[in-house]
Image 1: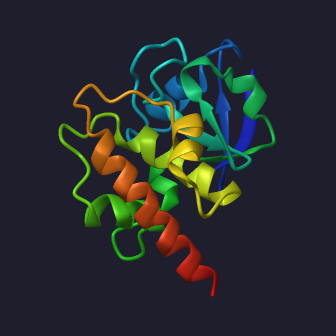
Image 2: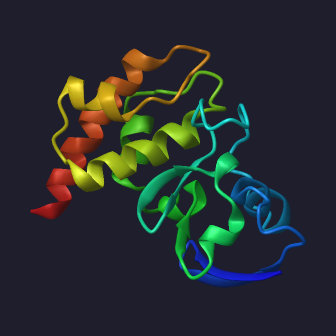
Amino acid sequence: MNISFKINNKDVSVEIEDGNTPLLWVVRDVLDLKGTKFGCGKASCGACTLHVNDVAIRSCSYAVKFAEGKNVTTIEGLGDAENPHPVQQAWIDEIVPQCGYCQPGFIMATAALLKENDNPTDEDIDKNIINICRCATYYRMRKAIHRAAELTRATKI
């Protein structure tokens, strides 16, 4: 089965035996983009979060066939060292990561939240950022989310 979509604004076409293969494995193993992580395989932890048409999804449970014709963004496509996304910059500013494994998923979930709501309250964050961090850096992440919101609003001026 051939599936075509955009990933990080580049057109790709992949030949996949089974269209029900999770998008996560196509991104990591076929397209060699290793930033998106495997955590639980049950769409619970959020380590695999990426965007499909600007919506945060858990790629471990999202069949690649559903990506046909869509725009997929991974952590590699969010920003770069010279021009980090406001969420990436806030993560740096607030020194969020401890082990760092889950952080790409948190960053992607936060970027999706801020696209919809650039001034989230703590309650908004609690309702929308439901990823899991085994190192429990939640306090630093909350500070970084508020900082990213400030940076996001500043870029709109």
